[in-house]
Length: 115
Image (cartoon, rainbow, N blue to C red; front, side, top):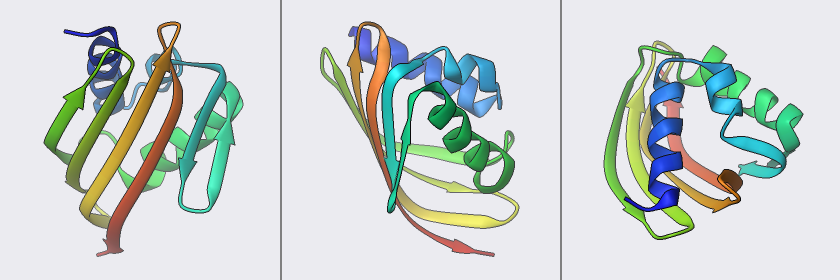
């Protein structure tokens, strides 16, 4: 497995468990996450970003199905579907770019709807 794939595997595990501190351990003050028209920067931004996901959109225990997962030495690209108590994500895609053992950049795009 590549270094990027290892970081992503950890991210997927801790995200699925709703483990905020575990999630944050994969990010740094240099991290930037983009979703929709919003940009989240650094560890405070990562905490805000993942609080939205874990508290509202996809709390621990939600269904999450990975469709495709491609990794290079420093990048991971995934496509997925998911469903929580409040939302159906008909399609999602993330790109993760890694640097120095952390997620340096992450983009997320979804097609989703409220239940």
